[in-house]
Structures are given as structure tokens and as C-alpha cells.
Length: 323
Image (cartoon, rainbow, N blue to C red; front, side, top):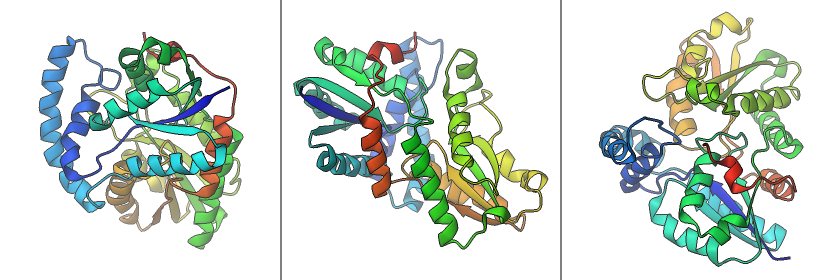
């Protein structure tokens, strides 16, 4: 039976001029920014917000090399997976509109079932669900019906094993003793209202955190959430506040390693937000602060994705779309 694998990801600006269209696509997505406005009014408002924000964050992107690595990492992972599975492996980048037409055509042209693997380990309607809705609206019905989603893999042994190895290798590289170190896991936040309405993201982050931390019984662990946007309350504790109050929960430890729990590729939230905003807070308190890199292109991570992609517990596209 013919099979195609489809890696779906957030997408990120590939150069500075792509920041504005990237943010426009992101902020006009009502699975990410929920308002009661009609779509046309929502779009009008958040196009303006995107233009202003693009100017603000341009400097941040310049500090990390003028681009986000997510697009390039996703394409590289797809290439490596092709070698391992011997099948077609396609990619889709949700917030890079210039890539959409070509990607949708490739998806529609492929034959047989399409196994969709999100590069988001934990499910939320704001990432995986947003892409499912996009496919529902933009793909031909035949292609949508052939989508076989791996909804999430928050506690999948292959994912947990890869993350444990990444952290263990980092501790060794930095000559950090587990019993002298705190692991501060920072996941991307979502509004509290999402969780109140039934989104399972927070619970999936807690599951991932708990499973990964079991591999470090001598370390102290904490879970927090970053990247809050807008005035609404988001799930807590917030990462910046957790860093500010570090001396209250560190139990005398001097080493803090920040771990990007929900990010499998480094990008603006890790390379700038964690590196440039949160680590300095910890350092200002006399602590030794480190950022553990994301899984990125580690060969064992790509092998784990291949293993996860072989799972048979699929979800239909319609099951992932918020009603």
C-alpha cells in the first residue's frame, strides 16, 4: 500500500523580509488569537498588529542570525527520514504563506494514505489543530480523507528517551553534576481560556515533563510557560516570574539548566527569549545559568521521529479541529 509521510511544523521567517508575512499569517489565525470579531475585522486588526510587531522583533531576529532555523531544520529532517523509511516525505510550514501553494499541490498529488507527523510533541488546537483546520479548508476532500494524524507523542518512549539523552549529554558537556543542578523546563504557553474550554495542552506538557524528569532523579525540576502575548491570563507559572523567584525554589542549588520542553527546533523563543531574556535574570542572582539546545537535527531524534511515525494509533483530520 502506497504511503506518504507529512511533517508539519510552525514555520519561521527564512529571512528578515519574511517576518511581517509570517506574523500576519500567525496573528490572523483564530485558532491562535481567538476573538469574537468577524474574520474580516479580525484580519484587519491583526494585520496592523503584525506590521508593528514585525518592526519590533526585527532586531531580535538580527541577533539570532536574521532568520529562524525551524524551516531549515524541518526540511533537513524530512530529507533524513526519506533515507530511513524509503517513502515520500513531504513538509508543510503553517505560517509561511509563500510555501503553501506548492505544499498543498504535492499533498493532493500523492497516492495512498498520508501519515501526518506534527513536530509538536504536545497537542493543542493552536498548533496541530490549526494545521488540521487549514487542511480541512484548503485541501481537496479526497486528500483530507486520506490524512492519518499522529495526534501527539507527549509520553512516547522514543520522544522521552531522546529528550533525556539531550539533557544528559548537555550536563556532561558542561561538567554539571545532576545533584547540584535544577532543570527548568520551559514550554510555550497558551491562554488559560484554551485549557478551560478543553484543550489538553497543559496536561500533555505536564506528562512530558514528568516522564523526562524521571531520568534525572537527583536533579530538581520545575515546569513553567513562556511567550505570553496580550493581556489575557495564560497558563502558569510564567517562565519570567519563575526565573525572578528562582532563589525561593532552588533549595540552595547554583546551576540552572533551561530546557525547551515543547520546542523540538531552536528558534526565536529559545535563541532569543530564553538566551537573551531569561538566562540574564538567573545570572543576575549569582546563579550559573545554561540553555540546553532543542533536539534540532540530532540523529537519534530523527530516528525517534521515524519510530513515532510508524505508530498505528491514528486520528482523522476532523477529530483535531476545534468546533
